[in-house]
Length: 255
Image 1 (tube, rainbow, N blue to C red):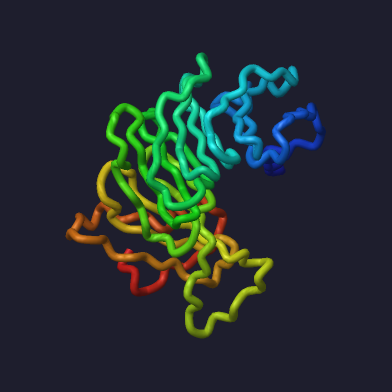
Image 2: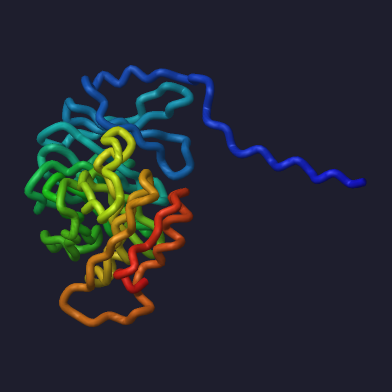
């Protein structure tokens, strides 16, 4: 009689502290690894951004150019560029090697909470407390964003970019469906996710997900201004699976 092979063990979270960095930036607002994990960035309330070799504990470079505290940063796929956002409402593009500011993008009406490059590092996406995500072309000299996503009803707290869409987190309470009890505040967290198609054309549709409360249906907003192809709509089921949630699409979405 053959016994089934044991299931492979999943990856384990780190259990041991390897290094502590004394950043000297007063409050550290964010820490981000680069793409291969060999370097990390620290964002400080002293208006600086610092690049570290974390395993050696070595400070490699300090980037100064923000007018207020730095709240987030990200590195490009080839480690040649950095982007950052902060309380001065600016998005800054940096040259890693020289430490110089390449571009400053302005347009947000409030502090910039989160920034991300697209996969080719040709576009920076920034999310702000002003409830918008703005897309900035790194190769153009035009001062205005190439696209503004403004479906959120509250400040944008995080943005993630894949090869075909954007996910954003915002502090917005979803409308409570009839018959579904209001979840405890600690369990629901007043947060949802806003999903967009790729930022290469006006948003076709946006989808709210409630990953921490599976009884709350997903709700979508209709496309704005044009009748886009049905095939361009978001795949709700795959998003639920990726989030590890048992979200149920609401019947009126048409997805």
